[in-house]
Structure formats: structure tokens, C-alpha cells
Length: 579
Image (cartoon, rainbow, N blue to C red; front, top):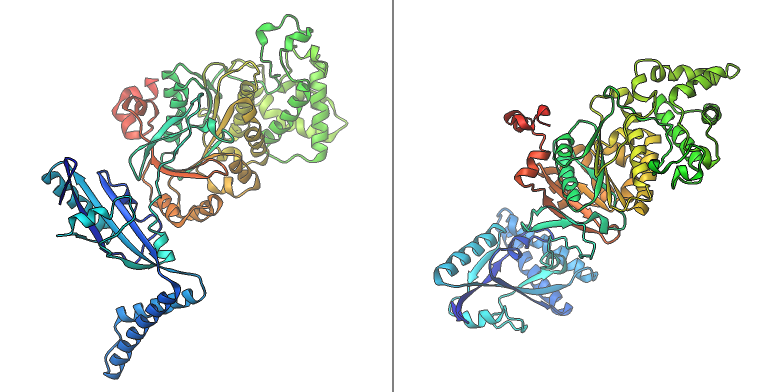
């Protein structure tokens, strides 16, 4: 023990190491929450000297083996293993694949009093022993031992062990689990949680990355929606706006608490007309024929709307349209708009848009074309049949506000895909508004519903590629690995997401996830055994950064975002009637 500048210190030397380790295995010791100086003294062993020393060791081991054979004794497993390891190492040294080094590892523990020093030393020793290391106090050599941990590069103790290159590389001390982020003047980062390795806060700014998109993939029940809602709430705190596709009404309590708007598609009287033009400045219209009535609508607004309707109708009808179907549909769509007085002339774009029933009427009137009659028959359930309330009519609600949640719980499963696409189109209208000056986050929960359909997946890919220029980010959340990683469109969406969040994975999916995201064996094991809410963040695009963290919410935040059935049942204010 030494008294140094008003405090005490003692030094431990590592004399034993575990037989098998993985990269970063010293992290618990390096991150120990106390004043501990750790020094690595590494000295290369000249190759000729290493070869001679290794040959002597092999000869000694071989001599021991032959002596036991001559006496009729059974093999010693430890000797056999040592001989095999020595032979393999000798071959790698001869081929130049490995080199030998001497490593001496010292730990100096500091404390204010003898009692604290004893406690801290015992704690450090316990951590070292948990790593299967053997540490020994430097009794009677306190001063020279202390100098080994000073930044002067001398080792008067010289208690070293021989390591090969591979083993030594696992001891590399600069393996901090922290994910650092450079701060900018326009700082929009949010707290994601705490680092599972160090316990320090982990903060991330999606709007400081190469693109603003994210993909969250996790098994059911791992906490992906909870983490998504937590980020959404904190992004709103920074002054950003947001839109959400909510299949299960999980975001309603959050929206109600922050003054957001809920558009409950499928509810009585709630309808979005897919034929509407993206007018950004409706209030500035002076007359239906005034060129300024359309505000900043794009020059090809009619063409863009017809192309979207092709995609939407393909999803609505649930079948891939043949070239004949597409040609007939394109002709009918242009005729429908022309009948409503809308043409490629921008002065006509402010007129009332047609509705789905108008398209069906145009198709029915074309009796000379059997394909038109067939398409009209397919549209009957959505124009005059059981689903007419959803799409056949003018828009009854205008999405606006800092948070808009499109709730889909009341929609029949058969029409959810076209409804999601229609909601995304309304969101895109908000995103592309040239008068919008805020960052915007678009959350698509249960994105597998769209990824399983080719046309919907292509729409998402276009959004992922184009939203950045409008200062908007797309956040996709899914539990179906195959629908995302098993298709070229899904892989392209992942490639266009600079923020990637992986929570607990199913054993059947871990191989695909590991290959797609280039995970190490340790990272894959973490995802297989992750607790609820624990996640691995992969960020930065080509400047790849990783961090394992667990989402942490304040009590009030938790009350807004939890969907735990037990908590909802225990607190009536959290249930559906408490919105």
C-alpha cells in the first residue's frame, strides 16, 4: 500500500488467464466504476527466440508423453491438449501467421481510506476472478509495482506471460461500448435509453445521419412498439412533427395526451378520397379556374395522381394487373377526371375531385371492352357494396397538426393494405408541403402488411428514397423478418435506413438477420437472449457504429406508451375508456 498525494493505492498483478476468451472480454474490468489504473506492458518476442522456446516446450511435452507410454500409463488430457496447441502454434509461427508477445497486466486501485481501499480491491479482485483471471497483490513491492501503471513505459516487476497475436488481440483495451455522436447547432437527438454494458445514457439523432429513415425488426413481445413510441414522444418534444400508421390503436393514448389528431379509418363518416389532389394551400383558392388556386402543386399533379391510383387500385383489387387491365384502367382514370372537369391544365386542378363510384361508372359504360366490365365488377364491393363507406365518397377529414395518427383497428383485414397505402399517401402530401418547415417523422407500425405486397413495398421504397429531401424520416417497424429481408425491395429499404434497431430475434430468423446486418457471433447471441426492451442499434451508414442499450422511460412516459395487459387492467385510466 502506498500513500500518494493524500490518497492510498495498491497494485495487483495478473498471473493467470482464462483458456478461452472472446474479443472485448476485458470490458467488465475496463469499465469498472472506480478509480483503477490499468496498464498493459507488451513486448514482442523475436521470431528465432520464439521458435527455439516453442521447440523446447514441445520437446518437453513429447518427452513426458513417451515416458508415460513406456510405463504403460494412460494419456494425460492436459498434456495432450498442451502438446497439440504447441504444435499448431509452431506451424502458424513457421508460416508467419502468428507472432509471440510477452504481456504483463497490472491494476492499481486508488481510494481515500484504508477501508475503502480494501473494499475496492476486493471488488476488483472479484471482477477479475469472474473473468477466470488470477490476480496477486504485489506485497513488499508497492513502489515499483505502482510505477508500472504510470505513463512512463517501464516494468520493474516483469511478471509477464507469453501470448500469440490472436490471443493478445482479444485484450485490446479500447473497446468502449459507448456510441458517441457529434453535436450540431441544430441538435435534434433524443435519449434512447442506457447502454447495457456501461449503464451510461445513450443518445441518438436520426436527423444527423446520411438519411433519416430507420428499420426496427424484432420478435413479437420484445418491446419494439414500446421503443418506437418512446422515440416518437421524445422527437415531438424537440419540436418535430409526426404521422403514424397505427394498426392496433396503440398510439391513441399518446396522441390524446399531446394534443394530436386521430383519424380512425373505418369508423362511421371517416373517409379519404384517393382521387384528391395534394393541394397544400386550400385556403388560398380564389376560384376553381384560377391558376393560383392550386398553390404550389407540382406541374405534373394529374399524372402523379393517376400513377398513384394505379398502385392503389392494384392493392385494392388484390391481384397483379395485366397490361390490358392497366391500359383500360389508365384510359378510364383520365376519362373520370375529364368528366369532373380536371385535365392537365393546372387551372382545373382546384375543381372537386371525382370519387371511386365515378370511375366504376366509366368502366361500366365501356361495354365494348370486357376488361372494363370485369374491373367494374371487381369495384362493386367498394362502390356500392359492404366496403362502400371506406373509399366511395369525398374526403370527410383533413389530417393536420403536429401529430396525426391513422388508426386502423376498426378496418376489416381485407381492406387494411389499401387503407394503409391511402393513409401513407395523405402523409406524403403533408411531407411534401413546401410550406412545412419542421422535421417530420413518419412511423409505420407492423410494416410487414405492406412489405408482403409488391406494389405497397415499392411505394415504401420510393418514400424511403425521397423523404430525405423534405426533411422527413420513415420509421418502419416489423416482426416479420422474411417479408423484409427475404425480398429485394425489403433489402433496398434496409439499405436506405441509416438507423437500424434490432431487438430480440427468434432462433429461426437469427441466421438471416446476422447475414443481412453483418453481426458478430456475440451480437447474434445478444439478440437471441435479449430481455424485453433491450436492443442493438446499428447506425451511421458506411460509418458503422453499434451499441447495445435498453429503453428507459420516465413514469409519465411509461403511462402513455405501455400496452401491458396487466397494467391496463390495473389502472382504468390507461384502458380504452381512459383516452
